[in-house]
Length: 134
Image (cartoon, rainbow, N blue to C red):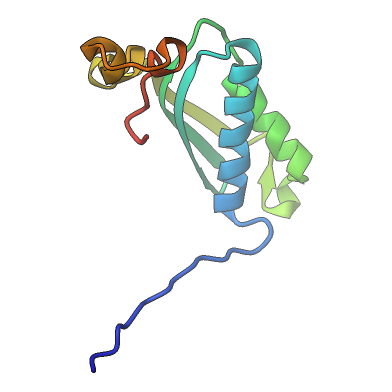
């Protein structure tokens, strides 16, 4: 009898790891936008390295948020407020590369397939399309 073999992997990072900082920054940007525009679409990624934060992605919204300020405020809340800590919210570079959501993705999100083809059972819910990742 053949035994099924399964491989399980996971990732664990320590406090202060750049991935954790990046996730908190992306979450703060999303929260700030959704607080002002519940219909916004945010596909935002953050990369953190020594002295630099890059926020990139596609955002479609009717509101404005100050992304560099959100980045700096989040880093301050984490506790990186002095260069001797290895990162300083006041002096780090913050680069943004944000564009509107691509038209290809928007066509699937603006109006759901079920609404377009007439198979929607709950018009209000089924009119909302999913993003490119579900």
